[in-house]
Length: 459
Picture (cartoon, helix red, strand yellow):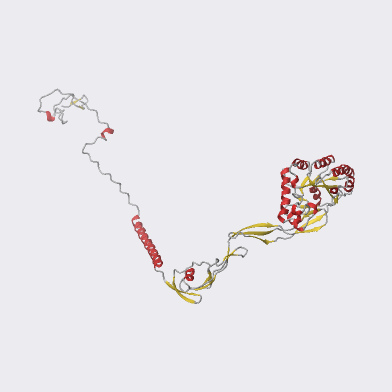
């Protein structure tokens, strides 16, 4: 029986006290075991099973409940949209089937049709092409020929098979299918020209030479034209055609008016030359003189240091051609050479100067022998701004003696261009004449300048 503590609160029986204390638990000494002999009772307390273990302990006959997916909540009106979507899909499918079916039907069972070919009524079907009509004998045209770009024959009857018009309109597609009522004219095929590659290039216009004087300056009034080069893909034939000739350029010949300035332009041709070019450079340096050297390109190899010295000391270095118009130019006249040979003479001469000096060559040139035709001037216009002649020919190239050369030099007047030579042979007479003449000209108030400096007076 339960007892009350001093505060009146019931307290559980202690050590099995109370007649029914153990009866509440099956298997204990009370309850079902009451009829058995009394034994000493031992009170045993088992610890509570932890929740994490208890949750995993299941009887052997435990069957888990099926997991049910949660029912989604109802949303708006998708039920009706789904119906409409299914109906639309069905309609599209039906239309696609009809289209495929009709196409298949027409393909397998082409509709018959009647057309007119060269005035005759022809029964055929909608699958027949223009080419098919010819194959069926509705017309008998002769094919054209296959031609090269120059019009020569490459293949007989290898051109276009026939020419057709449908309802009055030219039809280039010979695989076009006919339709009911077409009026077709089929005639002989046209010639077919081979394919070709094409490239354009600049055409330098003709040059008209005008005036008299030592300086020949391009006026830059001309306008370049254009040419077309075609190469046949089958034949390999090359055609060159000038499609735009351009407008004529003018080469002005004039002398330079230097006013009150007593200046002279000394020019030297045909170098560089062993010993003599260097000796002339020494004389020029002694007299504070600048000059212009017109070099022969194939003579520069092995003497690059001399050319470089001239450039470094402030002299102007220009081309006098690559090999002085050797070969077809007969050593004296570029105009005897082909256009391409002339181009090579100038371009190679300039390249040799650039390699020796490390700088671009001057665009001032002098042609061999002073032989300048309008055709050569046209070639020069591709490279040059001016071609230079002379006012005084000292005739040192004839080796008349140092005194004669000295006399000719002393005839110069302000603005004159003097022709001398540092190459082409023994120029010791020229060297001596310069040693004698330059100091006297300096005493008379003259200065010696380059061609570029002289042309600066032209404005």
